[in-house]
Length: 355
Image (cartoon, rainbow, N blue to C red; front, side):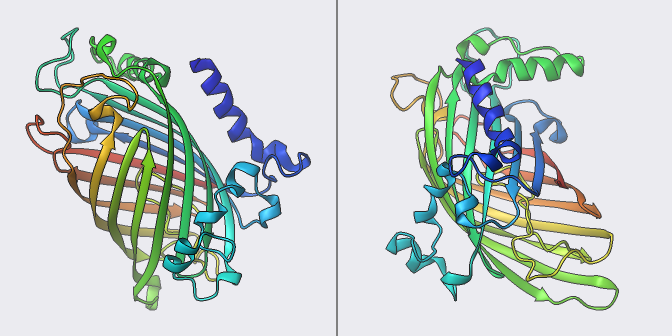
């Protein structure tokens, strides 16, 4: 089964290059933006709880809707354009819904969770249950110079099919770290289906001054409904720097984390080089999490009691040279389950390329 998931993922990620001649089933090819994300708590000196996350995402340049694949077109009702559901038209905030640009995206994400004790072959009491998740995402984005609405449909799996154990074993072998021994006690296999919506709004605090110095920011809110996770969040972040890229790329691995020049206003990058610092915060309300509550359709006790309210603070920096951008962000997160002794922290690396 896991081979089938990987085959589907590879087919989806290859579709932009191969789909130009396949009508409306697959998206048209062309230019776009490829981003790799890596979260790991080893940046914080630990190896427990949310211990690793990896995401590969691709997003197209602006496209007409007839160039977008059938799965992504099915998300149009959530974009806030004139053909959207009435609720989403009301909350989108577009000044001119007829003038929005569209982008489509594809993503492959793996998340990994482990207890603190690596040597127990059974679930350590009071510690986080072993869990992994692998998800293939299809997204549609609609935006103007100030607002971006993103909807993503994600088909995934928990359990051994997520390949989390194999991924961790490989990383630990390469780093000569002892392997965790309790993966037989992980959250079991279950196919998951999730739908998420995120709206982002641009804020310019200090327009570009001499020497390219600028301060800007972004606020966002979002909702995710599904059998892997059901949650809502609000938050935002701010950037201070030289020749800020006009893309508002997600600095961290998250739902609908993509990179693209959403808010370029028709302008390109300023100069060959950018350098900036960023900081932000997020508040989240979680109603269901398969890694803490267990599979939705299976009576499985994880031994954990999920926290409903979670807060995060993060700081980081980014560097860009021409069409390549590298960033690092460090996040401090409050407790995610009642038995957790304290909050956690982890680092996020992101590499973005225009292709």
